[in-house]
Amino acid sequence: MKLVKGALSLMLCSVGIGSAYAANVDIYGRANVSLQSSDDGEGRYSELKSNASRIGFKGTHDLNDDLEVVYQAEFQIDIDGDSDDAFTARNQFIGLRGAFGEVLLGKNDSILKQSQGKTDLFSDLNGDIKTLWAGENRLSDTVTYKSPKFNGFQLGLTYIVEDSVEGEDALSIGAFYGDKNLKKSQVYAAIAYDAEVKGFDTIRATVQTKISDVIVGLVLQNQEDIATGAEMDGVMVSAKYTIGATTLKGQYQIADHKGSDKNSGLTAGADYKLASDTKLYAFYTTFDVKTENQDADYLGVGIQYDF
Image (cartoon, rainbow, N blue to C red; front, top):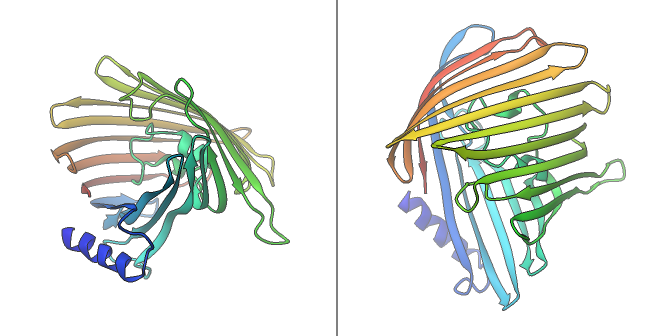
């Protein structure tokens, strides 16, 4: 990975990023690959899976004592080699940060997606909450604003522009309290609302806290399909407990479609930390999906390295 980071540094210099010596540039990434036995409802098979592995650069550049440029360009990479696209775009934006907060323009996670914090303990794996719920949107053509924090509280807004005569704008707004890493506060909480985002009106409330040595999380969601009027009420609970280098994790999710079926997903797993940036993990995920009459389950082991 040091070779990759060095090559990227040379590439950035070669394309002539202005004032590089005055800017703060952080090259980072994640390699996350699992070997798993999977059943999507049509029979079991083995697979090697690259779970949202990524590489990118981000940073800031001071314009004066009160204002700085903020930028990020992140790409998903396909380590298992299954995709024809070696790189696909993730969050990519540029903006300004100051006493007013920050304004970002580009491709970014919606405020509602960001509001979940770290309650989804199996994000990027098969147990990700996006399997059963709407709202996990990474959106192009966005303007995002986040206010400064006041006594732990912060406001956020994502405006999705129309982008064409036939297009329609949309909005994602939210309020946050505390630290999603639970290092600067005992509680993290958020409430967010999507208006006409990807065909849904969605409201999501999130809370996560530490009780004794157990970190527990709760997410409540209501979503309405704008085209059909179909509604869903959702609940997700998660918990994790760390013993030495081992973290035990569990998560249960419900998607109750009004006037129709109730779907659910259960995931249990464990992480073993080899170093601060490297872990081994194992998980089992099972879905009971009645609306599509297609249950699924996944058993996997993997390795994740952050740099």
